Image 1 (cartoon, rainbow, N blue to C red):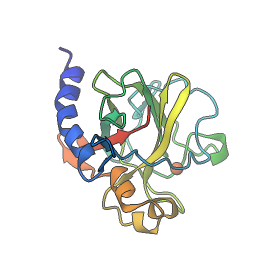
Image 2 (cartoon, protein in one colour; image 1 turned 180 degrees about the horizontal axis):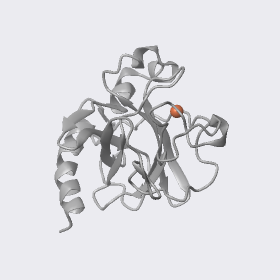
Image 3 (cartoon, helix red, strand yellow; image 1 turned 45 degrees about the horizontal axis):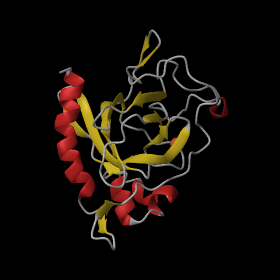
Length: 208
Ligand SMILES: [Fe+2]
């Protein structure tokens, strides 16, 4: 079994429980369904064209290596409302570099060219994903966040944002603070120290 597959299988067990914790709600039919991850604004910096390099590793853009910021694994599992892995779907993330700039013409071309800024992955059979990037950095008016979009073929199932649990800027952020507390918890994860940097895990739930 490939290492990535073995890892995701192991992680999926833990995440299934985490996703259900505090977010499940009973339906009239006695079947327990999960609370859908809240949609949030796409913002102005979704790529205007497909980047040349759009793989899982945002710390390498083409032949350039990005050395700023705090390297982090951003990973998780995407399920439907019944907790089944959303196989065959893809997840895209995009975020600013350590100095708060996006790879987007609307952000003045100030992004560090070594930072990939955007990545896309197909979810594996367990609905898992794993990106290599930096812990998100703040920019004027926003608490640190990573934008995320989940697609099934061309269909957009969810556009949302992911946050750093416990960041002092969250409470002051206009987009974050208007979310229901359960939704804030659903899109927040601690960035914990691991052997090769930091790691954050998110459990995302979408109506397929
Ligand atoms: Fe943003």
